[in-house]
Amino acid sequence: MGFFDLHEPEDGQDRFFLYAMIFLPIFSSGTYLFDAWYHYANTTEERSYEGLLSTIVIVFSYLQYCVPIRSRKALTIYYIFLWSITETATIGYLLYYIKKKDVVNIIFNSCSILFDILFTSGLIYCRVVKQYEAHIVVENKHLFHFMSRLEVILTIFIPVYMNTKYTSLTRNMIAYFLLFDFFSDSYARFQGVWIKSALYLFAITTTISVATEWFYFNHHTHIYEQVSVLAELAAAILCDVIIILQFFPFHFKTQHVNNIARQALLIHRNLYASDKRTSITINKAIDGIESLNAKINEDTTITSSSNEIEMNTSM
Image 1 (cartoon, rainbow, N blue to C red):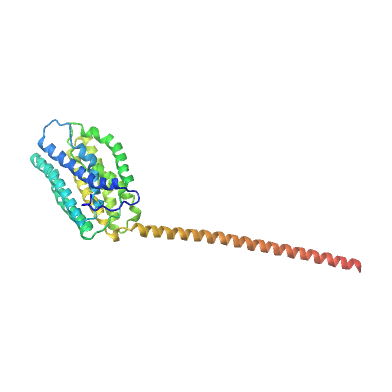
Image 2: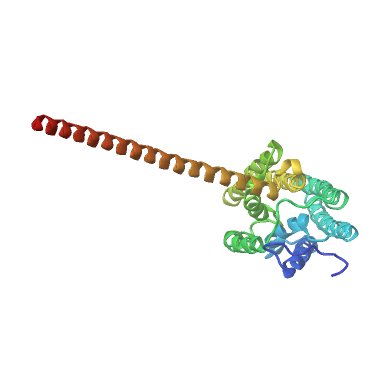
């Protein structure tokens, strides 16, 4: 592993996690490649497998943005290697849809090839050229969170993928649901209208894609399928935009600055509470002194009256 020159594990990470962050995107892209060309080579009317494996693990390919490799040379090779696997897989689907003359999916896969080039170029620019660090950090708990959420979502999607009446190949909708939940955890640290708008639009387009896909399954109207594919393309673009934008400091509050702001707010609240308690104590002390003075004055008046009465009596 000396070739990779890994980062040192931070809080919520360990060495095994760092290795997993390197190999999971490779595994994810590999399953996408297998599903694409398996489908192209085994195109029949009755199929029992529709790209389920790559749909399950495709979410891990998006975690390449924070792969813990410090060597600039190794990182460049890593990104180009993943890009070549993904492009080869997308070309397999593109050739299939060209053969079927499916215009919407031809547009989808053609645009996917273009935007994958732009996304990989953006990663190389941010991580290799500018050496920016990711502000949305992935930890062990996030991987387990992805896995636990997948278990619930797949109970809904597996029957669809295994139904030979439908053609639903590798889709990113499940990955986008998980990534939206993951990105939203860092929303408090977003700054600027661009990255916040991208996150909102990402959530909207993902929801539209899933909803129209289910309308297609229930009503068998192809316009729903076409809307779902185009909405997924928009969601893919927005997901890539969010990942690239979070590298730039002016789009994202650093954790250090955020911690300072929280500490300052906490100190301010403590001082305010302390001042309030002090003010209450002082007011109580003043009230006590005034009560004591009033009692002393009352006692003095009573004593003076008693003395006057005694003097009058003695006279």
